[in-house]
Image (cartoon, rainbow, N blue to C red; front, side, top):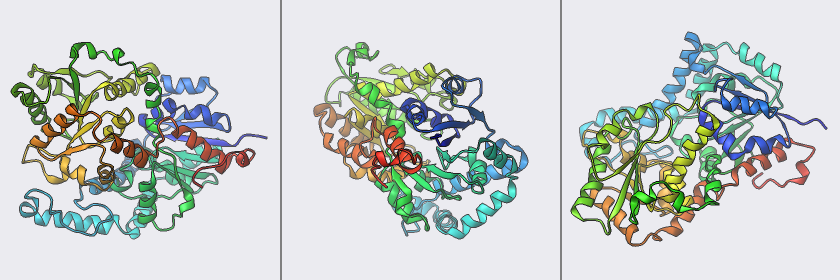
Length: 475
């Protein structure tokens, strides 16, 4: 019997890396005929490698790069994201002013009231999205994209990041096409921090129960049977390293000279402009002898052009090791360079004794290896507005789920940051059960299993000739 055809739409390099390093394309190929649409260059290693495996690849231009009407189309998507990330309410909550912000209520009450009002009017009511959908379709001629779909003629179209602005025109065009549509909610914060969905899908793939509840709560017309929990595909690569736990291979272990390694994972300067305050807190504690034991401090810089100036500032500090490995632009990199970039981050997570991080998925990455994390939930610079602060991220709806797992320590002050580091220096196993809960609650214990769960779903839902042989865990 002829295999059904799956069209995989990869709007950016993150989705492409998820697919490749989880091996999902390989497992799906056993049951389906695959085709790929991507923004990545045709002569790149990723596209060439897929072609060599018999998977046809076609490029598309991101929405916002397609002339004036395309830019209008793209900017409407950016507007959704901008408001939803800066509104000072937690999605799904009814309060209209944040009282936790230090002084913000007194300093800018009108501004925050207006932001909240706009947020509730625009992003909590379906009428806005109906208007936005019409505006998007009016701004774009969908004939080229519809023609693409007709030429490729897939049975199922899979969008690997439904909130990504690059392929919104393809999502819109697919509404009038016969194929069934699957939307991947790629990360845990998407449903609460990236606005609302304008378009609908036949199935939604999410990480966990939290995201399933959010979909049912925020959107009418979506049934429970349409939502499938598949874990986090991005975490599957950890299983490769977890099965090879050789600490001596970590290149910074020798420099530590027997001391425990504490790694500070920096954010980009535009997201955490007062990062040097946090570096100074740690180095000052080292110099003053305020840590429970002597440590080797590693500071990892996020690779990419947005980290401009960070290394130069850090070089003025002598009591740390600066790690700035990784390519600035992976778009034209080889698959080996992709893997080395990913493996480097994983190795830092795996072989550090303690990781100090900003609110992010890093706490989940470290939980895979049972490495304790102390999260910086404060800013030293009083000029940083609350809605752009680390404190704001800690208060966000998705992050509250991580906090409830009690698997990391969230520092609200410089003092509690050092207290958290000291607690883990003295007892590395503290909060170990909480780290297990992080993996259970947030990614449904899917490390190394997510690609299999994706494949089980697709086989059960679409590969009719074998569907009776595989029991899908959620539907």
